Image 1 (cartoon, rainbow, N blue to C red):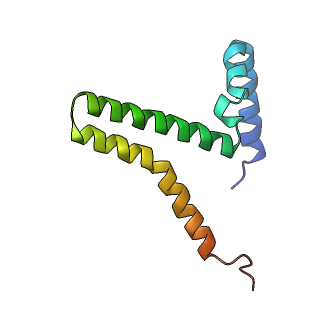
Image 2 (cartoon, helix red, strand yellow):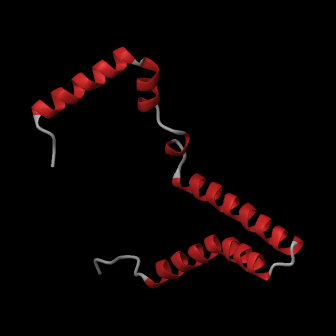
Length: 101
């Protein structure tokens, strides 16, 4: 559902007022954030590395305090992304290349 011309004009007026009152904030809203500039593959790699480091940290903390619960959580955190990749790959293999026949 698109906006009416009246609504578009109102939004343009609000945008103009915002730019006049607080140009720094208006610039921040129009400039994309860092994650919007990254590709899907880059975001996946960043997420993978972050998750892996978090899991290793949990494993180290669990080993330091001899806590099998923290070690198990750390192992589960480390396994999240590889399991997701394996599931997606398995599903991709099961689907035919050309669904139109």
